[in-house]
Image 1: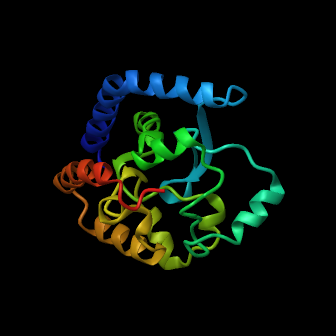
Image 2: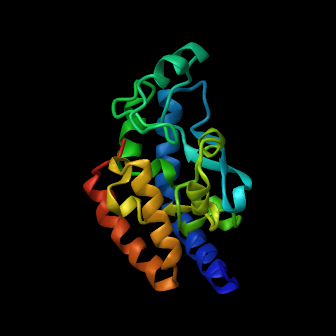
Image 3: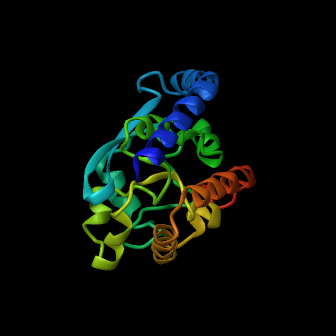
Length: 199
């Protein structure tokens, strides 16, 4: 990402965060009322550009689980070895289900964009244990900054298989430009409103 792209990403992210701050405050309060013991915000280690670790921010959409529950849930994974997805994930809270469907839970990632750890558009930032299972081919998707949205997001979201996601990411990287990013951002709005493939 060149300096101009970086500046544009950070300015747009800061503006979006300012505009959306009332929504974030309201949802944060609702999440705190739903589960008073936990913070409404959730942070998690992810892998970014050139396999560099960073802390990703989200709104909390799941309850805490024990290690035994995690082992049991691992058997229900529907996304293959390199990703973890369950359509009817029992960890998701009632409010969590709504904010995941609408992608509101991902809005704090705008902070990651402002910090320069993510871009508005790019590949999905994977977990360290997912990257550990990547092939050399898969690792090519980590040559650019991860994004809040991407070609995978506007092409089916969680309904896209890992192999399809990698192909879409590499297609995006090959054709990356400011105008392509703007096109994906515009396509993200109807994709989120349809709520298809979001879980």
